[in-house]
Picture 1: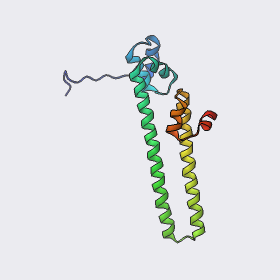
Picture 2: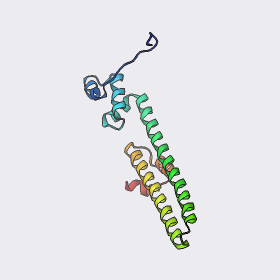
Picture 3: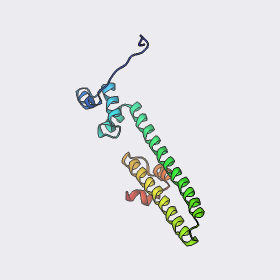
Picture 4: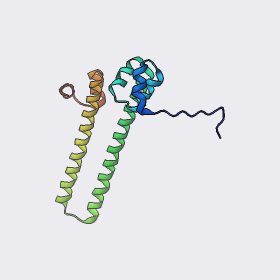
Length: 146
């Protein structure tokens, strides 16, 4: 039952750009642009003026990184379970060692790709190279090449 304590508003995100084009200072229009696509160039411009939206974008990025770390942890756990299954199947030690090395190499490559992806995004945002280096564990030389 709806009362005077609850109000529902339906926003058509498809019209967000139109609304924003009409009034770029409208906080409602700015938030609609953010909700529609937080990675859009217009949102980058909005972030310069609206610190709340900037904080929301940062929070989304941090949550995305957490999801990537969770995925890496899942893959590591899966690799351990696969290894146990291989031993249980009785494969010869050479085959097991080869698969183990391949798995470890794959995990390392995945971690490196994630570090590079995060560094690129941070570099696009003009974040200080020392901070990028600290967070991603990449060298300054690697970061400068991106």
